[in-house]
Figure 1 (cartoon, rainbow over the protein chains, first blue to last red):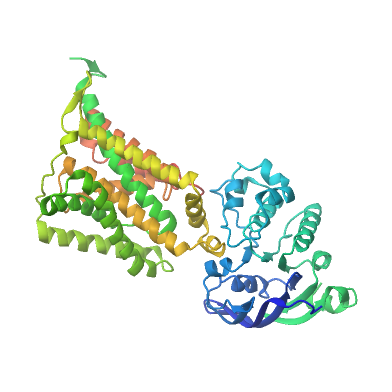
Figure 2: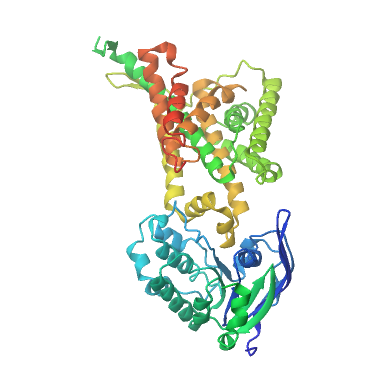
Length: 236
Length: 295
């Protein structure tokens, strides 16, 4: 499991929204080329962890090392330029932009991203709706667009916040196959999920989050054996 | 004499032209205000003072450096825009996380300080500014007499408005601006330097006001209060068009100028209030403005 060096390693991460202390010393690692999930109940700090790594939560302490460099003091635009890309839980599709403009919005930050043709091959539906207003797409299509637009930027580490939330089972399956094919293409993915049945189909390892801390790590291979423990953690 | 609706046709078209000229200024000024409000969430009460400074730059560079109208048309937006960027970097940027009211107080206070300074230096009587030689004279169109300079102002305004609209709706930079207006955090997390975008947008909105000031100098003469005279109407235009709507600002600016002109013909007593009556009606029926999105 530890054959790859960590692309991202987070240690003792604390984060705050105003007066509220959300993350209490979170630590975990994302090895290069793996799909890693943060599992946990609502409100335990999974989304805040992603937003802290991306620099959107400004008030944060600890260490977030990416390719050996600490991101903790960088503003989010500099973090993006180092090769991290974020797909937010609410999808963040812009209503005043067309589908094509949404797709082309994130600037290319380095070489090595997918070409527009490759992105369109993965998401053919987006091309058909290219001139529609971004928010006129269905929920599933908006999720596809939110993932599609961060693939051409050259980012190597994708932070996906609950990409399956509120979607029909057939679309969830489709997103699963996309995540697996992104892994094959060499992307490293940090995924926030509540649905561990879905997480088990795509991930290499799972970190369990509770009260703003990582309390356990379960390699995907041991998931079946750890099911009782996991159900207790997640309260399902 | 030809009559139309019982009004001499010359008088009707004369007033419509005046309305169109006023509308051209309303459009240029409300466009800058809408841009700034959209991205900065700040109601730029300094806008009128910045328009006035544009006119003063034209007058001052003519008197002190012998630079004429065309040089002023280039210099005024650069100088006043640079001053705007300085204001944004040193003062406005500290207020974005606070309530709207602080931005309003700061920009209103700045407007008073700037206007007071110019009154102290130049008095309130105002200075005439000659129409540039190339644009003197006029054409008799048969149904009315069109002074060339006034035609030029309408064309220049249309050109600026259309150019700004194309920049925002059809370019990559414009898509960053529209996206950052909706969700600046996410756009920044994609790697766009949003604080720089914000600064440039403020500078651009202010530069538009300064160009309007130069265009206005030969028509309204140059005086320290010219900004506060027009800006209240311009705020009404922005509210009617829909706060932050670019197209709304442009279309509403021209329409309300024309409406004002028509009112002067048919019911002169209401000419100075008709825009505020329209504002009240629009606020009752469609509070987000004619071109505003959502509620």
